[in-house]
Image (cartoon, rainbow, N blue to C red; front, side):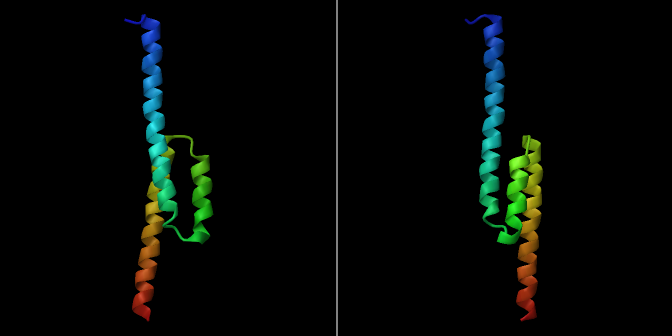
Length: 83
């Protein structure tokens, strides 16, 4: 059995790795969603992703991306009816 200090260090590293792995998964999700966003808006979202400091920032970015994708779909749908 490792000493108490070693066990604390291992626990801290496990927690950090868990958090970082979630961040990596979220970044992969954002990369996928970026491909669904129209090219003229894509750069702003890429910049926001690069400036994200935490998992919470990435969650907020995903919310914004979902809104953008929804607006694009609505616009496309409405334009279809105008034809």
